[in-house]
Picture (cartoon, rainbow, N blue to C red):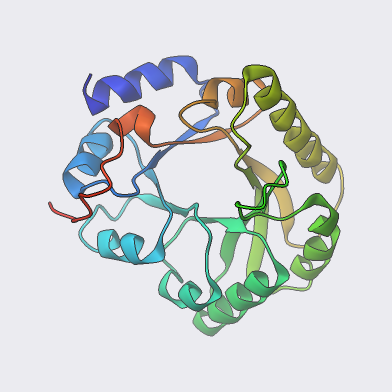
Length: 225
C-alpha cells in the first residue's frame, strides 16, 4: 500500500481529537512529501542533526516534534524551530532548555517523558522523580509543560493496556492540580504496534513511523528531495 493508503487507514481508526505524528526518522524528503500531501502536518524526529537537515528544505507550516532523547548540548540547535519537545526527562535538560530559550526570548513547549516500564535501556523520567521536575518547571520563565509522553515496553495487549492506563492515571492526576507553567493538554502515547490500544486508553497524540512509511531502511540515510 502507498503512504497515503496507510495514512487513510490509520485515520479511519483514530478519533478526530487524536493528532497523528509521522515519525520521519531515516525517511527521505520524498517520502515525507507524500505524507504531507496526504494531509499530515505533524512530523517527529529522533535526532537533532537529522531534524536540522530536514528543517530548511521542508514545508514551513509543519509542526515539528522532537521525540528522541535530547542531549543538552543539542538544545541550542532547535530553539524556535519545534512545536513540541516531547522528551523532557530531567532537571538538567529542563535548565538547559530554559537557558537557551531565554536567550531567544521565546517559550519552549514540552512534554514530560515518563519511563513507565522502568527500562534501563530507555530514557524517560521515573515516576518517583516527577514531583522534583514539576517543582523546577514551576520556577521557569521560558518553558511550559503541555502534557506527558511515554514509550512503553514491548508486550502483549494486556500488558500494553496496563502501562497505558498507568500513564493516563498520571495525566489525569496532574490535570486536577493547579501549577505554574504546566497544563495537561497532550497525552502522547502509542506507536505503530500499539496505537489502537493507546487510543482506547485515552491517548490524544500517536507517533507512527513504519505504519505510515513501511519498514525502515537503515542504510539509506540520505536526505534527498
